[in-house]
Amino acid sequence: MTHPHPNSWEARAEAFSLYGFTDLPTVAERGTVVLTHGQGPYVFDTNGKRYLDANSGLWNMVAGFDHPGLTEAAKAQYDRFPGYHAFFGRMSDQTVALSEKLIEVSPYDRGRVFYTNSGSEANDTMVKMLWFLGQSEGRAEARKILTRWNGYHGVTVAAASMTGKPYNSVFGLPLEGFLHLTCPHYWREGQDGESETEFTARLASELDEVIIHEGPETIAGFFAEPVMGAGGVIPPPEGYFQAIQAVLRRYGIPLIADEVICGFGRTGAVWGAETYGFTPDAIISSKNLTAGYFPMGAVILGPALGDQIQNAIDAIDEFPHGFTASGHPVGCAIALKAIDVILNEGLIDRVRAGAPRMEAGLAEIAKHPNIGELRGIGYMWALEAIADPGSKTPFEAHLSVSERIANTCTDLGLICRPLGQSVVLCPPFILSDAEMDEMLEKLDRALGQVFREVA
Ligand SMILES: *Cc1c(COP(=O)(O)O)cnc(C)c1O
Image (cartoon, rainbow, N blue to C red; front, side, top):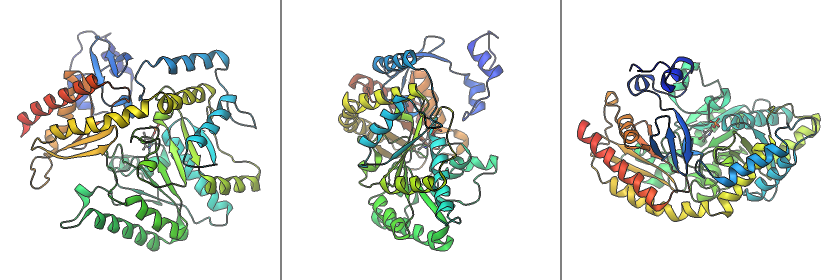
């Protein structure tokens, strides 16, 4: 694509920016969308075109793009104390208040919180904590990390190693000792004649076998998203976490819930773990934690793991880990407000109330013969396209069906995300009924158009 104006926003973006997680041929064909501002669940580009962002930015802008309470909290804290660290026994009052609040809203009656700038760093931090614990408790061989294929845990070196996606091979990752188990997607991975509970039992046996094979003493922890997000919105099969946790407990291996997407309302409860009825040993939080208004992540340790790690730190007097902006006062002030907005100002209630409506609308759309599966919970859903309904055969990759659907949506003023052969919808929690109807109507139109082209 040639740009009529070399000084256009698009041309300037392409001249100087290195794009991440972007299909460059698509950019070459369609150009870059440069955004300037937002209003409620909508964002606007430099040409003034308005898009309903059914992806909440990147899952995180759950309160929309102009929430006055959140911007006010940020402004007030910038005026009061615009930045500080959490090293050397000093930390801001906002940091103190947020840790207290996070434990209050966690599944734990007590525990400890450590801050990062992102979800990836929170996962890396948790891995370091587990390795540190092994070293300090005379179990230095306890270093292996278990996750699942298709799990997404971020992009820093440990988090990318945990992520079960083939694209990390371009970095020579995963590192040694990061092991991936079967993706818990019954529709895709279930065998002929296998019931959902049999599938769950098979995954629990697989976990047991891997632990025995590797040696239980070599495993540091098991990380899982309650609902896989970037893997294509994959809710766990029936009884999955109960079965997995029973195996892990037999060997004393901690279960870490990566709640970066699920946490703070996405599944209709504060935590995804709450939705699926299990209590993890620690929680990784980010994204919704600040409703996307500040880059921030947190490791929330439950009582047992919190005590164990604190004891190990006490023994050496100092935990040599932390980021310059860990516990940033503005981030903490925003997070405190975001938690209040989500839990007390009705945002989580909106997800609970709106989820059946969203599911029903998508179920109507999913009657199309080229939709193989509708899956999700709360305000996170995916529609998976298939070429042949009978055999679950995907469309040929060169047809780029999910990209075409997403691009057609973009043309119609709706942002949704292609993921493999699926299209993901995870709207902001503030969505009104009329906005939800707009989302469903545009999606339906885009699907009809694309399936007419390729089917
Ligand atoms: C987004 C995400 C991460 C990584 O968070 P970043 O802030 O992008 O580093 C980790 N885990 C899950 C489940 C995520 O969705």
